[in-house]
Length: 68
Image (cartoon, rainbow, N blue to C red; front, side, top):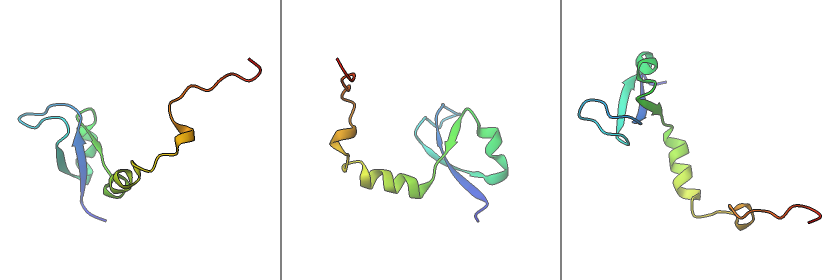
């Protein structure tokens, strides 16, 4: 396991802006709470691959109530 964790900024920190990726020592992650969230490269890759393969039955279309 590596000694660094990749984190994506959620709040400006110095000259770094939200959305930028930074590498943080694993024992310092707790200090970045509120400024950044850890990202998992594998999950990010899977999300970009499957983002186009959405099931049309699970969209954001409101469902009718039963019996109405």
